[in-house]
Image (cartoon, rainbow, N blue to C red; front, side):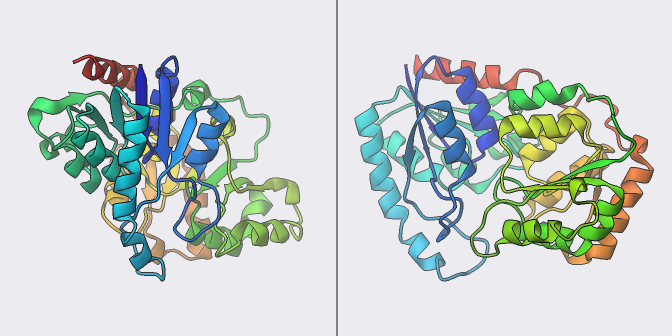
Length: 358
């Protein structure tokens, strides 16, 4: 069987790819992380490692802020549609599977014209615009949370849950502490966060004095955060307390999450799903644009696992104070019940195979 998987939310996409790897898979996504940035995307790097065919799509995106790349990006939408059409007509997939995001729309439109069955997966607590549009053309809509079911045609909905990487599942058993020093993992997601990186930069000497820090910066050419923080590390008295890297692969993330005491991060849906699964105390700083991450963060706070602060309210001093406050009361940040559905990647895989056979 031939299956096209479209990038978007890469974590559940990778989990489903792993489940369907016995079939012939073509992955369509973005080769570069950001518009006008030469850094390779996380999804491209991970798919290359798996040995799966990857087609990079040239298409437009609605950017969060106006830049010199905004207008050229919007003009790429027609290119993305025609490129998708010819990719699908050449590969002749039995089914197309989308995981949200701007990349999937031209592929979904092309699949609908070519009468190829479509399955989409919604990860978020409230449905994203891309999936709302795509649902009109989809045969089935897999959802992760009941809170999003009113956004889609009821006859198409299948409640599956949100897939979690196998490396995260393996990390559920906490590693016994070998030191009394707390370990903190700070991440802005696969793209990194310049704001969070700046907060770390302004507080690094204080943090490294008392804690061990594992920091994933991302790799944006514009700010050069990784290079600057790597240089700053050399001036630390306890430089062995600060480990900085652009990216962590799935295996490395699993190993890190097994041993850390606290996670500081944005509040993307896949991040919070993994933190809930691992019952890992967290300090969440949601993206200021849009409502999705704010809703996610408040949900994790409500279930008892997180402190939440908006980035506009933070400076290096407050940043350190919040971290110290959580660590001083670590045992109070726990989820009291299992909130996640079991085996979501298997359920989505079954939906994909069933749709392809109809």
